Image (tube, rainbow, N blue to C red; front, side, top):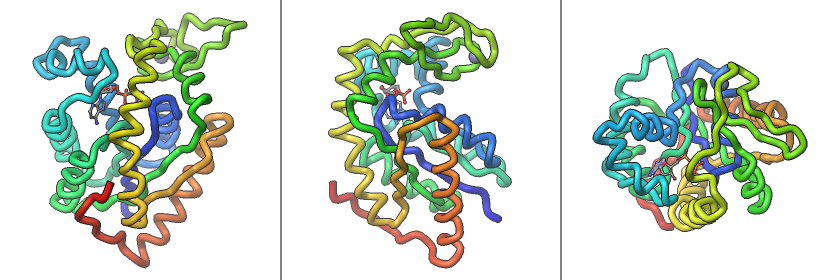
Length: 233
Ligand code: ADP
Ligand code: ZN
């Protein structure tokens, strides 16, 4: 069967990168997390990182051109026997349109856009208790009664992201509502959108996502996704 090509669409804190890791174990795919890629560029003080830093720290989006070029170069290098999973891209109408064009050129049609659903309060709670591993990038949740200091997977040091402070969290959610949430309607029109309940343990959510992906995959074999060329946000 053809490789699966997935977008994870949802606000910060909904569990996209946790699910990306789990889906990566189930399917032969390369995960492109634009947030992780940008954070690595910032840490290495590359020209791209220097351009992205201020926007990231204040919770705004990095420029479309920059991020589109970054995703394009990664997708071009993708092995033919692998699919992809996009975590954190596209985030604007312009990014979604550019992605459509790229995927047409590269003959890599989207299989499904998986949209984990959680209420606002739960998203804020998860983000506030989130820590990330410096070595393997894995996200972990700290509980007040037993604070974690080391990564349970690799023993690496855990830290709180600079943009996970209460003020920046609210800013990022507002940016999501305004610029990214309209993409759900866009992918809905293309019959690609699959909302999935985001509550419960990571494995449980992953199982829901896998059933959804398998269903879409079967449907894709019989009727290809509709082409949508305009975004009516
Ligand atoms: P979140 O937890 O907010 O989903 P990410 O790790 O995906 O965080 O992204 C962190 C920051 O990196 C964003 O707030 C934004 O500044 C920048 N960024 C990541 N992906 C994109 C994108 N596709 N377009 C613009 N900016 C992006
Ligand atoms: Zn780790």
